Length: 523
Image (cartoon, rainbow, N blue to C red; front, side):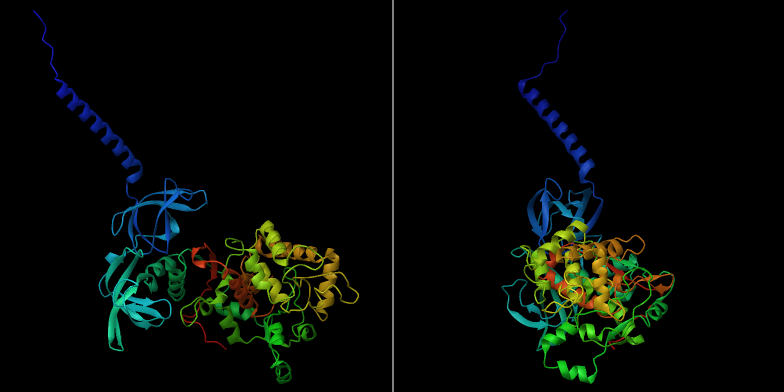
């Protein structure tokens, strides 16, 4: 008896092969999906011209750029070669996105533009916001709204030509107009405020930081208590008697009122305090001959105003207050260039080449700051603060009688009744018999004794001015109340050579215990 075997036609074999291939391919897809495509969470893009990388994080090819307001699925988190966390994201509305976006450009669990509730309240975050008749720059401009204008959201429309969402907003009638389209990045919502509150910022801080975040989405903010042993009122009290302000009497004002250059010199000079931790304070009114300045004790109101960070976050028009840079982490060096340093020093005696050397001041400051891992703009601002004149003063001229050939670019030890002599004595002990040695030594002093000092961690301009230990003011670089504000302004000058919105900057902002809900007004 002959055994019968199953018979497969060629058509049947082809079908079987195809089915096996499809099953295998589906299995591979399922494995990939389980390993990579499982949604961890949702998020919303936040920023301008955000790069989407394909293949790998950070180093992958940029296959797309997106702006704020796009809802994405976060598929996984990876560490990039740049040291940052990156999200693998996907989205199909309003445009297809698949790739890696740096995590600080994604607000996890945020509300996408098309999911915002109708009549949600929003505020403009800059001045002169243009309202258009159509959701595109090709529309007619109906009017302009000032900073802090209250609006109500009606709907979101995506403009594929520009890559931006536009919001149809309603507002109080102006010149007969009460609604129109405004680009989404001109608004602030309260999402980031909640994030800031969760990491320790009171509501009065969080609302201001929310607006700064809308302007500079790459920036990060960290709250810290500068005086853990005492509260706000006690911290202010601890600064009394050791904080001074410039006091120009009528005769001094009459002398300089027509001399803008002299005014600039006066207000760019600080009174240097003790050079070493917990040393005795210098005489507060002893430097009139040093920089034509008379000093007086700061009042309680002045202390409360200049110590309160909330007074120095935003300008009245919604733009960033330059003093905000006194909270910048002095270890951040991204975006700093020789051109930025040169801009900071451009009106001082430290512009251009160092005398008798083939190197510029800006080049030397940049190289030594990089070596010591300091932000060179903070270094240059400190040098300008101490020696802002267009002509060298006695501490950096190298010609002061009895101390010829010695220099002190950071005014270290320049205190007491003879600040110039004392500063040059310090320079002599350090062997600073050249400009290069003085600058290098001063930068090392700033790094070792302040920014990287493990006992104090004074890595911001604010910390170097307002510092506390065991309930008392301690180890403060200078006694001038205004100093960190002037220095911060010059740090901002350096960054004007860069696109601040694209830089990652970290700010450490003091939050004292028992602060008032609102800061005091300017004295």
